[in-house]
Image (cartoon, rainbow, N blue to C red; front, side, top):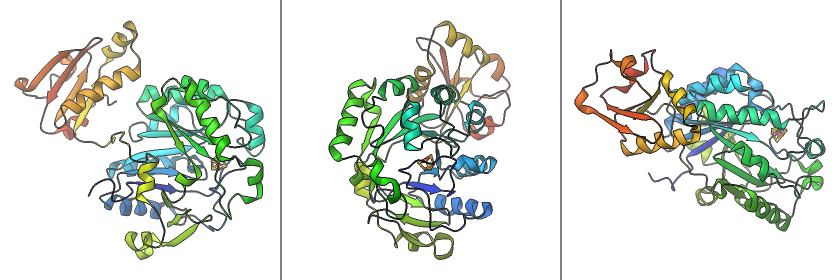
Length: 382
Ligand code: SF4
């Protein structure tokens, strides 16, 4: 099956609640009475992972981090089932430690950031219900934790009347995400009509906003522009009750429960467009934390060398990815000075290649069973 025949990403809206009160929010799920219990959420992940064309799952809300440890367990379970994992959050309830702990299982952390000014965040409701505002320092802590622990950082920005004249790109440059998605605020019947007149931007205003950011952003290739038209019917979405829903007709159309009627039957009850999914650049590859085709190891010496030579984490990851691509298959990549630490592992030396990168010694081992190597506690996974 080619990637253009089916949508390969599922957005699983786990919860209907949020600690923020954004006026443009279209994920209130006013019609949903109760969310699926934890056990059934895990079962849902199994159903999703059994669909061979689904490769990525994005956990969304409401605010998914309100689930606390349960969200971490779901991300871990999805990763173990072989899915690429992503969480979309307002970031207010997580910290560096949270990113570190989930980093072994999480491929993408998406933080919703609409503005770098308190005034705009207050007016748009992007703050807690008692008025606690997000801080730029907190966003920076989360971004640097992603870079430090090898989680791909994505930023989502919604353009509204409140922020339409801002230039957010300078702050985005500081955060250095791999992807910056800029949405046009979308009216959804039954979800956000009450406040939407305050939020709505015209196509021309939205285009002007995007052009301004494109002029200032350091890396233009990270920007993904998503108009109202592209947002409609281009997502495969599951609501907190375990039903598919789509937004192609202005409001939400909901299927029967997936667990009761099966994935394909429920899917046949909603509208979605694979062409639009592709047009909005929904198909992009960030790898998979459960990927058995290669393994990176960093030793204690590595950080020292990296610091001495002033090499950024991004540069390191780019080098590792390119090596992994070149030796797709059974490759164990060791960075630093690994021989002492790994000499108890029997790896045939004839299969060893040593390369000298500009900043660090890179050793690539080829071996039969990378899973076994994962269990050795001397190995630190990236
Ligand atoms: S943070 Fe997200 S889910 Fe929460 S109110 Fe804002 S848009 Fe809605």
